[in-house]
Image 1 (cartoon, rainbow, N blue to C red):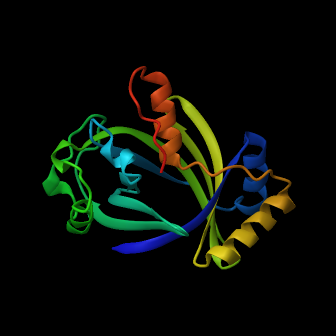
Image 2: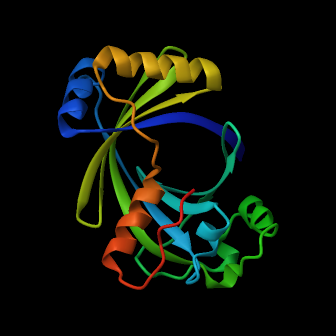
Length: 200
């Protein structure tokens, strides 16, 4: 499956997370999901500004390749199965055909892919003004952080509504930093000599 993802993100303090949870998500049961990040030893995915991950949620494993576009992220999905462990090699045959075909456009040796770590999310979500409002509590590499996401079909309308929501809630607009970027930046800070801090 292929789709264009349009979403807006904002990092939150613990207090801001609590206020939003009480106002919008108090009746929502959280879903726990874990992202397993995949790359080569030379971090070719990061160097090409693309992301490959497996998301394990409610017993379903979905591999996703993400490629940034001007107003969103193009995503390629395919269901997979297998043991998910740190440092596990990902064989080319395990890649869904759609993802394998898209990766062929890059100079990446897919025989060298492996899992480099994971980020777990406790997620709540509700419909909000023609979109989906998502509240996340994330844990990775002994870190914990909080963020608000707003997934929409129309970029310009979505941006306006997201900024209005933040203003009404008294929350400062902060630069968008993806989960994968935060994960790799933290990994870089604890693995001296490795260069993991590329952005996507």
